[in-house]
Picture 1 (cartoon, rainbow, N blue to C red):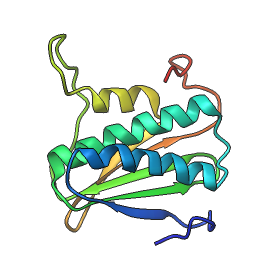
Picture 2: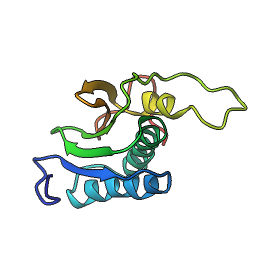
Picture 3: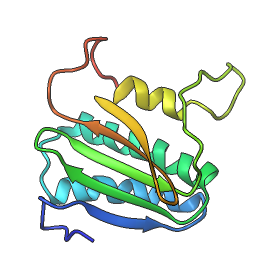
Picture 4: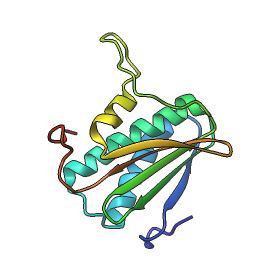
Length: 143
């Protein structure tokens, strides 16, 4: 596991089962970014918290436990990876106007600079990157 002070290595932590753990986990992601002094302004820190929350919630709801979160700096962007044991590939699909859930990956797709997924031996890793560079060509970021 990466030490908080060592910005060159990923900081990884486990997220126990249960929805109540998502709030603590997303705040921990932001805490790592602040402690490591990633060059993100307040808007990007809020966006980081939102996107981390969406991926962590998806993993907790659909992927089963244990889940692991990794936070790192690529040199230009913060990268958050969330692993789970579900091998199903997540896809952003629009939710209906009356749906209370199902918008997470649509939000990630709209706000992240990049995102994707890859398989690992026990399931999959879903990740996103967010950085201080110019907003995506589709317009200004609004987190």
